[in-house]
Image: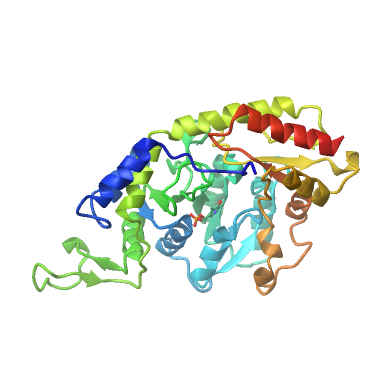
Length: 386
Ligand SMILES: *Cc1c(COP(=O)(O)O)cnc(C)c1O
């Protein structure tokens, strides 16, 4: 089976992890700050916080932006459930803005319309909006920033797919247009730490709050303490935090992987361009390109032109699987999940996302994918679509 995504681990990555195993620190040592520094250097953001997953990063980001009961957070329905769950963890409500069918990202026009409507009806505006750079394709961040300033919401970029990409020349993670940006390092993503994530920000106080929430709400920084120190052992718990720390092994792997982030993304682009060419005359829509941005190309998602195909979406998907092509579907719209039905959402709420779901297929794409593998994927698709 050719998988849809796969990590790329070098001997140098392995050595980096083994060296940590032989060192004094398996957690809370020098590797986490070194990894964080590699992320700030790369993205240009002032602060980076490594945590044990992007899910945790989204949670601490929401907490640091003071999302709580009575607040509303908006995100895209075409994302992994974690982009929405983080608001619910904080006791806030979640709502969605439908996608643009060409980019698969939250539609900035629908966002503006929904903001206008919410305001004119006197309803609660979102405290935070979480755009998701779906497939690594940057959202229209300048427009989202403009709306954030106009309507007074904060922005968390869910860039789980997008390290290595850039938006109008600004590296994703520079936080040029947002308060916090979150990356995921799950093995299928651009770089990996096995499990892991990072939250980056240019706001010192947000960074310091996220650091507290990452580690039980505890600080050893005298400038943050509210009482006089009892002695050298002294620390204070200032809020109710969690244990979301990344281990030294993970950070060492991440630091080593960061040396190849640009190579990973450029190979993804080469493969994507080749897919575009090879799939050109098939009844499908290939991924959107925007010359203003640089996608990280986490996923190569095609949409079937079902009016021109005899088979159904399900038949094509299963046909590919039978031929050993490990296709996937990113994503089932979040509002269609049974849990979200319990949150008051139902079928028909976000028709563009639902239409996308009925026609999308993620084709295999990963840095070590061979040209033969890719030709096999194309041949299988050709056979099924003819
Ligand atoms: C993978 C992913 C997450 C969650 O990342 P984890 O590191 O697995 O917690 C969140 N949002 C999106 C869009 C993702 O793809």
